[in-house]
Structure formats: C-alpha cells, structure tokens
Image (cartoon, rainbow, N blue to C red):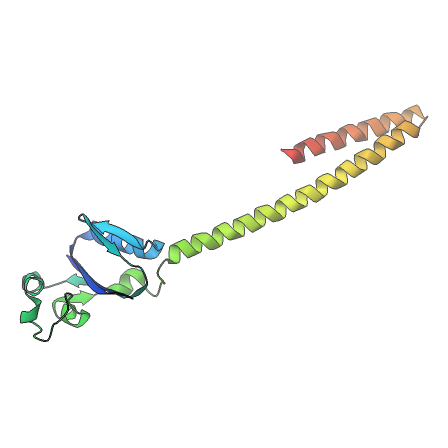
Length: 175
C-alpha cells in the first residue's frame, strides 16, 4: 500500500490507499506532465506542482489509525492533509527510487525534443531534395535546349538518354 503527499501553488494534499496500479498511474501522470488525473473517481491536480513525496506503508495498522484521526498523532494539525513528517513515521519514503531527479513532465519534454529534432531533420532533407530537384530540372532544361540545336544524330541519341535518366531521377525525388 502507498500514500502520497504533494504540494501545489494552491494546496497541500494527500492521496491514500494506493495499490501498485494506482501508483503507476500517478507516476505516469507526473512523468508525462499530465496536470490532471483521476483515481477511484476523484480528480487530482498537479497544476503548479512544487513537491511530491511517495511513501510505501510499512505499518498498516498505525497508517489506518493516522488517516482516520490525524490529530491524535499531531495535535497541532490545522490543515486537512497529513505532512510528510508524519507519513515518514508509518512508511518509507520511496520518491527518489520511483522518479529520481526527473522534473515534472520529463517524458513529454523528451518526446518534444525528439519530435523537434525529427522535424528539423525532415525539413533539412526536404530542403536538400528541393535543391537537388531544382538542379536536375535546370540540367534537363539545358539538355533539351542542346537537343534542339544539335544536328549530330549520335549526340542527339546520347542527349535523349541523359534526359530520360534525369526525368526518372526527378520522378523519384518527387515521391
């Protein structure tokens, strides 16, 4: 069983009674930068997330007592969340083991960088293809003019063959 404490710009909250599957959903939301997610029919928000701490509950009996009546364990408790200090007394903090030093939304950022690099590469390839296509068309135009002015039949045949080659290369580049 797991419990989470997190702090946003507007609040400090807990998520209790998480199994492995629910914990994975929270970690995936964190890594992918999903601001909102739902667990057990309740919506949670990581909007402007400042801190997150994940605990593996070791003492379930005390844990159940603490979440049922947190003031019994901290008489100065005035908020509706259980602090990380109190959670550390009943569980082991495993935040680093699960998310390390990764920033909120790190996977989305990595995907964004990969996509940006792919787009830049595709754009560069398109520009290079366009330049090559332009050169081939210019060369074909030049050879066609030569064909018109040439009277030598052997030279005409060679020019026609070159023009066909260029047309095939141009068609390939257009695909």
